[in-house]
Image 1: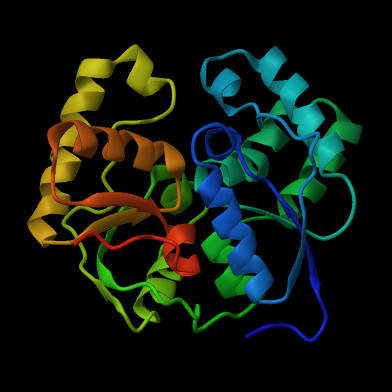
Image 2: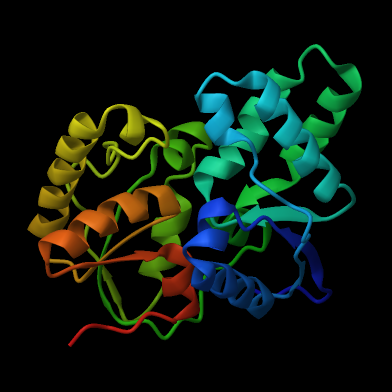
Length: 250
């Protein structure tokens, strides 16, 4: 349900969306505006620092986190189409700045304002009908950070089930890692490839036309293997389905 007054939202678009999947940014804005959000896009935002943090470079991660906190200073919500990046801000920024009281306070305030897209739509805006025209058979992959880091499990499923044209087909072990894991897939490519192969077997077993998720890292990993292998399924971000922007394959 749309709010009577515009809800102030700052879009945290993430590196992957900005560099490789800008359509996800546009879809996210379209969905937010559909339900009464007044969206601004801080152009000074850069990486949240997660790659550096996961690689053990805390100094660089703190530097990038400081830039994030400056870019998103102010009032209103911070919404991102990435459970992974939202978890970084909410869960890891307090760790990065635990010995810096002023920055810790800023990090805690930013964390309280930060939401992944489906979480924000359901928990804050109270959306029960996404008003999407999308049609197709869809299976959902639980990204590790969104499910385990933020505890968001039902919100994306609730939104998908509420779209009249969508048939949600649950895969087995939907919460098993796809093998991306950020730098994990770079450090251990052979293990990563085996993991994504296992994930795709479970996707194909559902008979779905689309696999979706709330994290572009997962979808890039899954979608890349699908594309190279020619499997009859398409990886799309949840925001695109909610916006109704995805072309259904014939």
